Amino acid sequence: MEHETEEPLHETEEPLKVIEIASHRNGVGGWPFDVVLFEDGGEHGSLKVGIVFEEPAGQCAVLDVGKLAAGDVRFGENSWRGDVYERALREVIRRRYGTN
Image 1 (cartoon, one colour):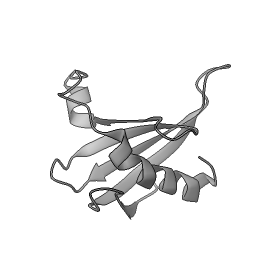
Image 2: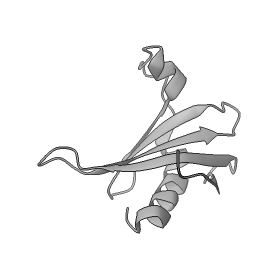
Image 3: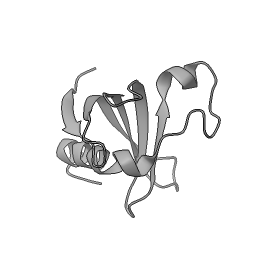
């Protein structure tokens, strides 16, 4: 885990502690995306993973890692508003790679 930073979230202004960032090319013809592993310091704070596709905005998914490990991928149970996290996630990706 080589990369740690704190970035305020857009809407909640709670700290986001980035643990790791990685770019994925999504096969030969798919849309590339970035994955950000981070700790959310908000009300529902936990270890989360954000999946951020290249622009346009709104292409961001956030899931709780502990719930994923337990097999929980259900909407409403392990679904977090990507629009709340997207700005901060794109900013840390931009700083890391100069993209997205």
